Image (cartoon, rainbow, N blue to C red):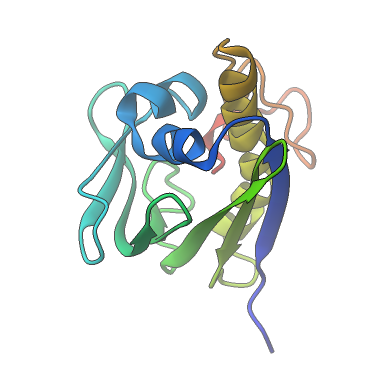
Length: 168
């Protein structure tokens, strides 16, 4: 039986180099991705971490591929959410393709354990993260759709959003 995967594609009205910068710069990620700051050398084998506002590590992994500005892939351990911290390591890959109006961004999160907390969270988390990225690059306005007050994850009762902000 194959493992579940999540695939999300959007087109962003910005050049691939700018999308790459937004994915790999702490200055950008803190504005749209759970207020986290990405930290990595972005070379294969290097560590990648997403630092929470208190400097604790929210996500940790290893860079698998980094072909600027075309592809970025790394392993994913979701330490921020206690229910997902012990899930098996998964993989996220960003593919950036130039199109006439900007960049086609495809996010694939695979190697997910069936029924895992991580699999559930990334399904609802990635659309919020990418919406923030797209909004920031297209308008210059930072909107963190992953913020607790913005999160509206399907499958969670409106009164119980304790983990809604801890998606991808």
